[in-house]
Image 1 (cartoon, rainbow over the protein chains, first blue to last red):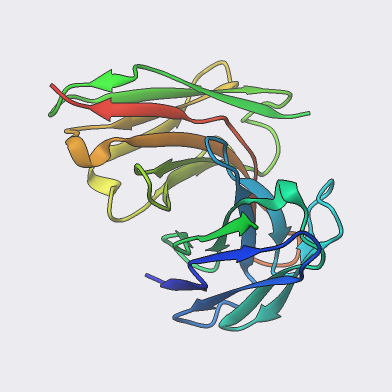
Image 2: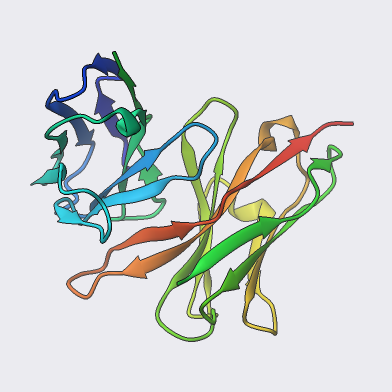
Length: 107
Length: 124
């Protein structure tokens, strides 16, 4: 199985801050990496697919980059509604796997 | 607009079979090249892929669950079922269904939308 390691596991930031979340995979996965946002008690929501493509309807302050084994999710200017847990997920090979999550808190 | 909704018993006894249904509106599961998928999230934990069916055809399962899981479409083509046999407390989780969208540029996919999820507790 492809192991996914996100960092940090949690972080606290202020409105307007630039936030970076990283995801490292145990094998090269091209750009087959997706990012999801999950608010408490809600279902995951797709933010970024194929490492850098912004899902329709997702604010442009979210962006993704990376290829191979190292990937990044950036929130350029943090908003209060961005308080959530963020997960990366690889679709390179079975079984599909997720990172352990990064819990983002707004100060 | 495609919407998914999970339904089924919220409480299942140990050793019994967990059965859930994902109702799809705004799409037919037999049309289009989508991966109709199930995931679960153990309490306070991360997400786990259970499996999916592709274009109402062959199912693909997580090897860790393959021996106990069946995912199947129903004949109405608007529902996808999940069965997990011989459940234990370790199967207590929120179960989600989601639509997998294949990439046009490579053998990969992503999942959108997701259902709201349904909590299943395994307890006697």
